[in-house]
Image 1 (cartoon, one colour):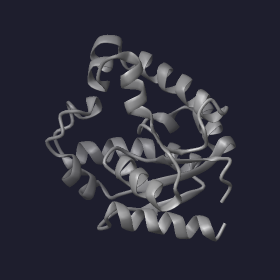
Image 2: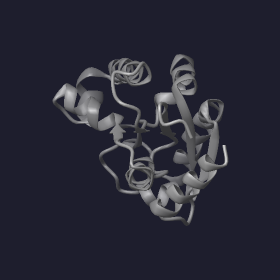
Image 3: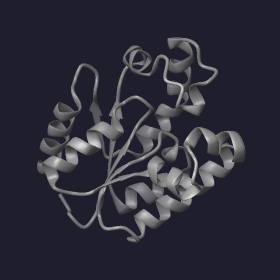
Length: 174
């Protein structure tokens, strides 16, 4: 594993990116960059407020600008928990792949629905009222996630610590 490069965790909301990043940080002794938290702090408002007040396009532009900073070394190499929409842009996918190892965290629609049901903090879930709605959105995004990933790790039925240990084991064999 190259300690001079970032480890990017990507995947749909609810796959455990933030929790796994924290566990992986403890195992690998690397800092964590939580993209959504950084974007909210810079904007001085929550992600739902950014979506509501500025729109998704503005949020995506800020997300890409932050990714460019991370990818070009404005931050020390870190474990980067990416927002679920980061890999949707081809330019972002190129940045991810060229500046680090990209790890796709995956979970079944049933698992995601169980984890996300009732979560009001996620703007893209506001009009999603069923597991089928969530599965449809996941199906649209999955090809973009897969195109960006160097490594795919399932998270169904695992704790964040177990997922982090699997990632570490995979990285050690590369």
